[in-house]
Structure formats: C-alpha cells, structure tokens
Image 1 (cartoon, rainbow, N blue to C red):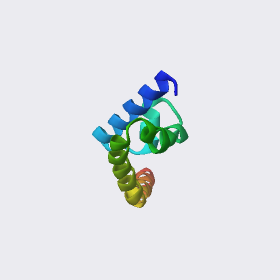
Image 2 (spheres, one colour):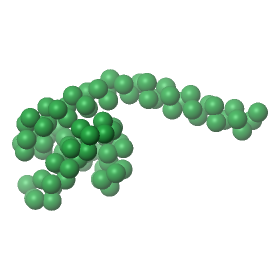
Image 3 (cartoon, rainbow, N blue to C red):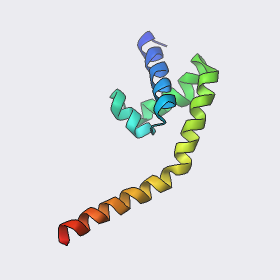
Length: 87
C-alpha cells in the first residue's frame, strides 16, 4: 500500500471517530468517492490498525441504523421549503 493511501486511511478514520460523519460527507471533505471512503474504512483500515477499525465500524453501523431518520428529515425539509415558496 502506498504511503499516501496509508495516511489517507488513518486520516479518514480519525475524522470519522471525531465527527461521526457519514461516508458521503467524509467523501466530500477528503475529495474522494464514497466507494473509496468505504473501502478505506472497511478493508484497508483492518490491515493497518484493527483496533481503530473496530471503533470506526461502530460509528458506521450507527450511521447505517440512523439513515432512515436522516432521509425522513431531508424530505420534511424539502416540503417545508416548497410550502414557503407557494404560501
């Protein structure tokens, strides 16, 4: 694994632990694809630091469990904005 990839994996993992952000928002911050972030956190991180990988896995599972709530909130916000434009 190249040094820059190794460093990116560690940086992304530490960022996820400190912020609890979703894969999508982390991808935006680091300027990589969601697929890259996912692979970094679920495959490469286990090779580099299994303990850190376990901590990140807990955050990812929590985000996955809550995603239906975030989706519902986004829909609610969308319709509120549309109502404000009409009314």
